[in-house]
Length: 516
Image (cartoon, rainbow, N blue to C red; front, top):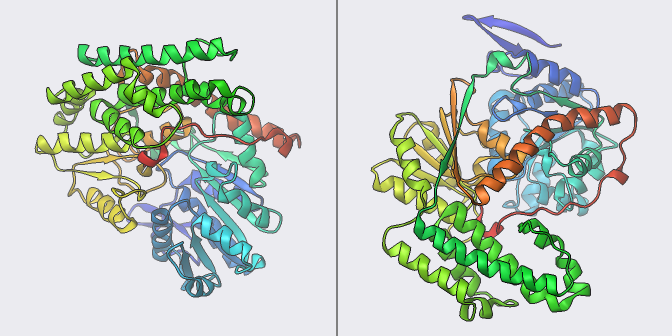
């Protein structure tokens, strides 16, 4: 039974399995929880509006029926630990376990028998295959960041074991804008009901503040424009070669276009392999240069040059335009030129006293931004993933977030690890150092502000660069994503949604080894 109590003017959610006076009573959360407790559902709710609280309410309902336990999945160890801590604090239950890849088999065997288990997907899928998990044990399975349930991600394999036997709850900030990908998520998780709210929903409005968005355009300096021109000429030469080799390729020089034709080239047009893979590398280099600046571009070049691959030696030792671009970039760096976004970033941050969260997709630019801020005397830290030699381990990430939450750090510079689910405290100013052509990532980033107080979002855009391209793509995808829930809901109502509509989906991103 969903009831409330009143304490000193505040209303709280009340349930025998939830700590009294701990969970603020919000109508939209209660409404969504009530709708999701009887059939497989996905809750679509912007960042910062309490998807985990909704999950807690459904958990309490399921556990009180004594029909089985709860498995809560999240994509990273940090997120799993965050959920575990939240449940230990608010769920009146002793046997709450946690399972990650750090745990040895004997420890995992003991943890899997808890009434509630928080776990990472990979180890869960592996232990399911090892028959270490009793499928009948869990009557509710929760998939946090459910938009990941595509392709061969572990969520899809786990869901196959549970979606016909257990109640499924998916949670995400937004559905993808692409129908194929969104359909795949719904089908993979066996979703029967799409429960969606946005910032504009009437029952959500009382709990959010307006966020003012500023799109700030900057011009590349002449030194950067010269480098940009060299890279563009080098890229044009490869496109000309590909067309001469019979490949139908348009005027729109996008990374996605090049990646889509890889398989065709490797199987049916091998003569085009060298110009194609060289074009891909130049496109990566150009995109990084335009969005992130001199240092990130040079570091990308250093890493690429050190690898063995088709056309690498020719690109770095024989291509006059690419070699000239590197030469000009090194010259610019020695003269203190980085990117015209940095002075604007400094100007924006200097004008506020509150905490600031900066998002950038590329790890090298995280360091550039952080170094710049520290030279200004600003107390800043970085938040990046654990991959690679320079990555932040789980405990270090937790400590960094806590210092920011406590106000000990004024500015946090984060990659996408700060976008997904992490309990980063509310900030009044969020800055996008780069644009992202993803509705999911945009919503996740934006949701870090405008919840408890009026928010401010600043998006930096370099004119005539990939930033502008991604801006237009992103805005179009955001509009499509808002309509996707309604479209798929109608199909579910008409029993017109099947796995045949879903096909494998290839993610197209910047190099992942430096991203997070």
